[in-house]
Each structure stands twice: as C-alpha cells, then as structure tokens.
Image: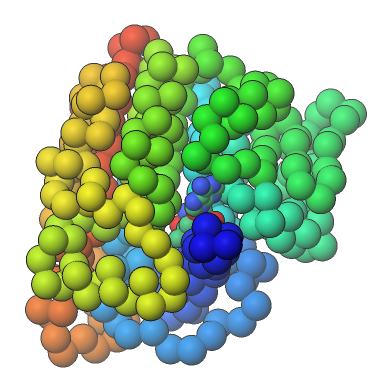
Length: 318
Ligand code: SAM
C-alpha cells in the first residue's frame, strides 16, 4: 500500500543520518568512535555545507542534552524517539553523563537492525554488559532491555501502545525526563506529533523535549527541500508545523508545556563555541557561505520544558 511504501522510505532516512554523520566524523568535524559500527562504509563525499550542517546539529543537540543531564545530576531518563542508529548512549557513558536509563524508540525493523549490530560488535555490547548488574538482560530480535539502556520497536503514531511498552520496560514517570526527536516529527501529521508531545507533557511533571527538524519551509528553498524528499517517496506529513519558529513553539505551548524556545540553526551555529567553529571551518574549504546560511536557516532546534521539581530547566539556553 501507499502507507507501506512511505513508511519504508521514512525508515530508510536513518541510514542517511548515519552515513552523513560517519562522513563528517571521518573528516574530523567531531569525534564518534561508535558510528563506524552502524554505517557500512564512509561512503561518498558530502559537500562541506552538509558536513557543517551536521556539525551544528550534533553540537547544538548535545549542548542542550548535556545541560539537562547535568542539571538533573544524571538522576534522570532520556527517551530518544525515532532514534534510528544514533550513538548518543555510548557517548554519554564515555563522558560519565549516563542517565539512570536511556530509552530508544523506532520502527521494529530499524530496531531489529540496531540490535543485530549491537549483538555482533563487542565495542557496542560491552558497555551494555558493564552497566548491567541484575541477572536478566533481555535481548531478542525486537527488543533489548538492560539496566541502563533499552530499545523498543514501536510506532510513535500509536501512543497507547508506546505508553504500554515503555511502562513494561520500567519507565519511571517521577524522574526528570529528556525527550529527543531529531528529524522525526516532520514525518508525522501535525495531529500525530501533537499527540506525542501532549502525551509527554501529561506523563512527566519535570521534563524537557528537544526537537530538531526543518523550519521556514514555505519559501522557495524550503519547497526545493520538500520536493527532494518527495522524489524519494518520503511524505513530509508534518511540514505544516515547520512553517516558522513560532509554529514549532506552538506545538508545545498548546499541549501542556510551560516554556518553549526555538532557534534556527544559523543562529545556533553563531552561538556555538567559536574556537571550535573556527577549527572545523579550516577542515574543508567552502566557497559559497550563502549556501551554508540558506541551509542552516531551514533547520531549527526547538526545546520545551516543564519543571515541577524546580531544576531550573527554563534557564537552559545556548
Ligand atoms: N534521530 C536519528 C538521527 O538523527 O540520527 C534518526 C533520524 S531519521 C531521519 C528518522 C527516524 O525516525 C528513522 O529511523 C525512522 O524510522 C524514525 N521514525 C519516523 N517515523 C516513525 C514512527 N512513526 N514510529 C517510529 N519511528 C519513526
């Protein structure tokens, strides 16, 4: 059916993210010793503006994520929705920033692939075993549950099923919780993503949601981005919520979040530590700075908080 074709195209987007991240790390934009186990090869060359865009994405998201974990002193949970082949869990372990439990959700077929990689690559499985103290480590084809890391195959558009599965794997609604979605909500309709965001606001009293995705999609450059994805049969069902930074924030403010902020990635790029930005700008020559600007102006980070425990979450900024 059309839905199957389109869901399959959406599932394939996790390989794009991984190969682009692997290529950028092979050039030295940032370090990720684990990404090699999820991308078969370095792959073909990516344009310098793409690499800088991924750099801004990874540094921007990590900045907010790490700030949250520090505020909570690791006494928290992380739920990465539409996690794909993301390697954040392993980075946090290496940086002594591991939350009490790190959850990942994706479609069952993506999860099965990720579990297969973890099972067969000791550098991935060792940290899971090391951080596991009780005797029952659940590891089958479609789910993996250890003390500190859990992957669940589920469709994010089916909230009751998602809620049930997370509870089955010991999600604790009382713990400060960070939810992360990187290029995920845009593949769901505005009502489906609002339901997800609303569920999160209802479930946790102290939480932060970080959403990275497209923005300013109604101009000409945005239209070209949409057409490129559609050519690959990817339906950007949620593009309406990507019209502006305000529509990004509204999704949260209308569903029970207390506070929301949003920045386009050009702004984020200009706020990242400038000595490191200067370093990565020397890695590859970029002659069209305007192209980088246009690209970064069409992606954003939006973050929303609610803070019953008064951790000071609304103060988290760049
Ligand atoms: N967040 C990862 C990253 O940045 O590397 C992966 C991003 S990839 C562009 C989008 C991911 O969202 C894919 O792995 C896809 O399978 C997942 N996804 C999209 N819609 C989903 C849904 N309804 N349920 C579960 N996963 C979904």
